[in-house]
Image (tube, rainbow, N blue to C red; front, top):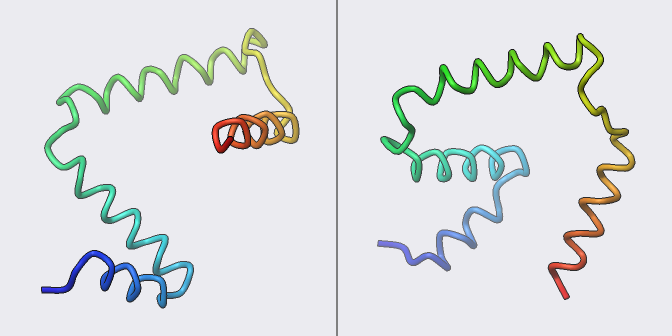
Length: 80
């Protein structure tokens, strides 16, 4: 059986799209059977609530460039 390092080396030779798919599949495999039975319905309700706030004009909307800058700054702080 291949070691983790061997598998990683092989995975890094994949195309970016194949690596993305592999990462997604691996992460999905960790969550199998973990999700609560009512989670899908709860997410549907949350999405509907948030969409209604946008339509009503009560949601706080943020500019993507500002959000990206904040995320990048936070990631940089975490790296230090």
